[in-house]
Length: 55
Image 1: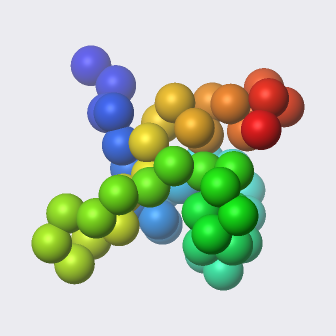
Image 2: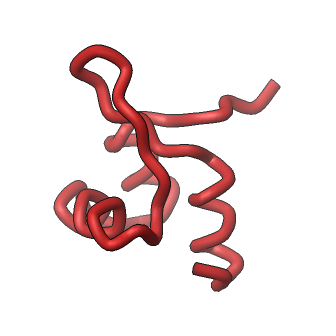
């Protein structure tokens, strides 16, 4: 089963980008993220949209 959300580190790895770029993409709304405690998780669906060019 594929995860519904991944850490910032894994999102950066999946997209081939740096952590700072991932945080910038979250800030401008291109990636959906949410907090669980102190962790920030990125929704896999939003990563797929970026890869597909539908951001």
